[in-house]
Length: 274
Image (cartoon, rainbow, N blue to C red; front, side, top):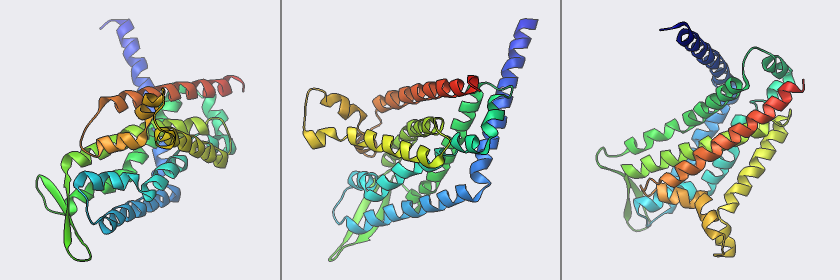
C-alpha cells in the first residue's frame, strides 16, 4: 500500500471516528434523559391503543383490512404527525439556544459529519420507538398466519394477519420515517426555538399528508397521478396488504437526500456567517 492510499485510509478512519462520536453523543441525548423515555412511553401507549381499537371495533374484516385500518386510524395519524417534531426539534434548535452550536460549527468537523450523525441518531431513536410492535405477531399462534380473536355481539370473529402484512407495515414505516426525520431536522436548522421548529415541521407534514389525499377531495384531474404517487394513504394501503413497491422507495430515498442536502446548505450558511 503506497503512501497516498495510506493517507486516504487514515482520513477515512478519522472521518468515521468523528462521525461515531457525534452519533453516540446524539443517541445518548435521546436514551439517557427523561425526555426520550417519555416519548417512548407515550408512543407505546398509543400503539397499544391502536391495536386495541382495531380489534374491538372491527367486527368484519380481513387481515389486510385490519392492518390498513390500524395505519389509517386517528390514533396512528396523531402519532405519526407529532412524533417527528418531538424527535427532531432538539437537533439544532436546542444547540443554538444553549450556545453550543457555535462551538460545534467552529470545531474541526465537517458539516456532513454533524448532519449525518444527528440524522442517524434521530432515525435510530425513531426505529426504537416501533420495536415494541414487533412483539404483536407473537402474541398469538406461531405459524404461517398470526391470528387474533375478537368477540362480537353474537359471535366471535377471527382476524388473520399474514407475515407479509407486517413486513410491509414495517417497511413503509421505515421509508416514510427516513423522509420525515430529515424534514424535521431541516426545520430545526432554521430556528433557535424548539417550539417554532415543531410547529413548522407539523405544518409541513400536514400539508404533505393532505396533498396525497387531494384526489379524494377534488376527484381526478390532470395532475392526479402525481398526488397518487406521493399519497401516504395509498402507500400504506399497498404495503400493509403485503405488496412491496419500489416506487415509494425511490420517492422517499430521493426526497430524504434532497432535504439533507438542503439542510447542509442551511447549516453551512450559518457556519460561514459566524
